[in-house]
Amino acid sequence: MTTVETFDILILTDEARNVVLDALRSEEQGSDLALWVEVTGTRGAGYSYDLYFSDQADAPEGAAIGVDGDVTIVVPPNSIDRLRGSRLEFASEGGGGLVLVNPNVPTPEEINPGVPAAILALGLEGPLAVFAVSVLDQHVNPSIASHGGRADLVAMDEEKKIAYIKMSGGCQGCAMSRLTLTQGIEATLRDAIPELTAVTDVTDHASGDNPFYANEN
Image (tube, rainbow, N blue to C red):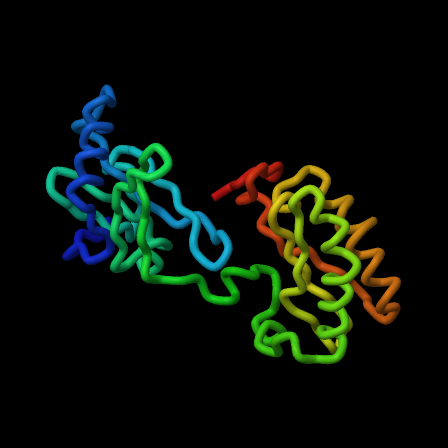
């Protein structure tokens, strides 16, 4: 059965609660619906989220269920610790909208999935890493900046000579990102550092501004 606990995971400000209640009243089955809040991934140095209405009865095993005012809140199991202590606010700027204020931040492993933790822990102080960063800054990023793109080295396996690259801006989620990686970034890095054995893209393209990968979360 699902977990019903003292709800210290998420609170709503008065304005946010009113917005949610107004939206619930507009739903045909509003009395049966709960506000679901879950972490879907990372965006920059923080988490990305999904807020939606769904039946409380559909809550999975281990989910946290709480009540804030007249709003029932469901948090799926894998989002509980990532959201604990959060606050949902209403921001009037930019036309107004709900904003989730979360004191929790992703771990380096969450921000850079696909990079072994031991390699992340090495940092970017090794000779290959330092040189790769300079190649990206001097030769790659100036050329892809024209369409708002950027590529950064997030890790370097100095022993196996593997560079882990993350793209952002116009390159994140762009349908041409694979071509940019292989024919632009990878080719430039391999030309400058012939001993590289692989250039691995660890970008979360599904959370880009124009994602072309299906997000299965």
